[in-house]
Amino acid sequence: MAIEPTVAEIDIINPVPDASETLFEVTLRPQKLSEYIGQEKIKESLKILIDAASGRKETLEHLLLYGPPGLGKTTLAHIIAKEGKVGIKITSGPAIEKSGDLASLLTNLSENDILFIDEIHRLNKTVEEILYPAMEEYSLDIVLGKGAGAKALRLDLPKFTLIGATTRIGMLSAPLRDRFGMTYRLDYYEEPEIEKIIERSAKILNIKIESTGRAEVAKRARRTPRIANRLLKRVRDYAQVRAGGKITEQVAHDALNMLEVDDLGLDNNDRRILEALIEKFGGGPVGITSIAAATSEDAGTIEDIYEPYLLRLGLIAKTPKGRVATPAAYDHLKKPINKPLTKPLL
Picture 1 (spheres, rainbow, N blue to C red):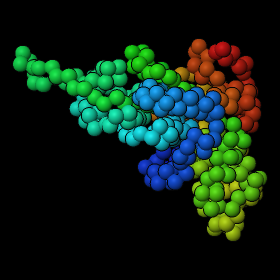
Picture 2: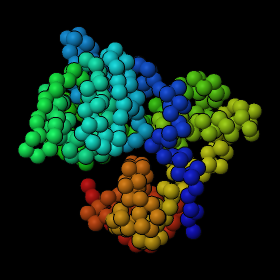
Picture 3: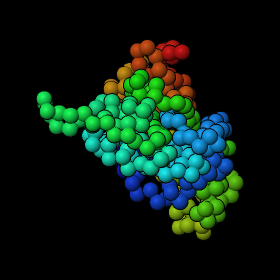
């Protein structure tokens, strides 16, 4: 029987930041493109865009960053502001509830500033429509009053750059997507890149770690920088209490096993999803809502947090009829295959 998840188990591999991690993330955040590890093609393109806009003394065009959580979208936004020597204001789609909230943000920007909206796919339609003229014409249309006496007022805005970030680009409306000058997809990192990130973080935090210890942490970090840094933090605590403060391969192995993060970076929640797929639905195909009901997990959380990595590892596949467990999933959980597998959607 699958073990029910604890809060600690949910947090450890969840790539969405926790409020308590803000200071920790800021401490480790790269300040320049040259310090940012990975996403080489994106960095090269951004460097050209920033240098070109600075050379012409123009405002940087609007940018859209998308990809799974924890890969560095917010960090890139901060670096773009720093490299372009401009200010940045941070908000999120759910935080902008009314048109007045957006108006307040836009009217308080300075010339060439960056407005970063995380989870931009969660903007409501009314706010989104007000954003269109702001992005295209740097103007804000406000309606004063109601009914026959209502008056329309247009305010000029300083030229600014909107950087939107989303984990679900398909949920963005086409009109909003079309207003971004460049769109960048951040992908999962390779293990050597994660090792470099762990090495850099260990130096900043003054952690003693061997190369084999770095490799062990990187192997289980789900190819995600935020998770790599979180695991490093937890392994540091274990090493301090149990191993004299030095992280070796064995220390990292023991610490991560204690946290129930396995060799592929899967935790109990990942395994519960795979076990439900195999044991309750015969390996699939099955819809995401049925998997969510069987695991008592939110369908959106499964799609955003767990499924992308399981798909990346090839442990599940999508078919026209739903999700299926692959032979790799059966092998990882040491389950016998008792039926022909459904052909995945190509």
